[in-house]
Length: 153
Ligand SMILES: [Zn+2]
Image (cartoon, rainbow, N blue to C red; front, top):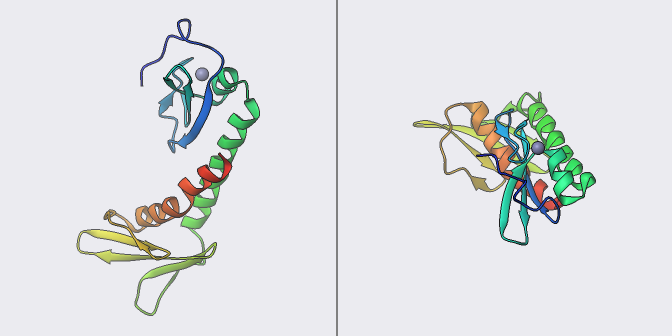
């Protein structure tokens, strides 16, 4: 996303809408150009949108604590996901599928013709994933990523 010229935009009065984890330092703050992993999506009552880093988000929303706490939630989620992926509690069910009981949900990964799918609770993925790990991560994100962001918003 292109950098915005904040000398021509309001530097106050923005609202933080959501924070998105890009899983790597592949984003850029549209205000200062800094490489970012956690995109802070902000909007302004004048109908403007901007994607910025944590510090710039604090500047333009005047709410550093909210910018930091939403980013912290996602960092914690990424840590939990990393542990979940290699958890020793994964085991093979009687049917031979890899399964785990995780935070109240049954997650099961199974092979299909073109790759792997996952059940996250009652919901089966529509997409086919190239690896067991990718299917595990998709199930985790489905159950916890959006929900988490909404819960703290
Ligand atoms: Zn910035």
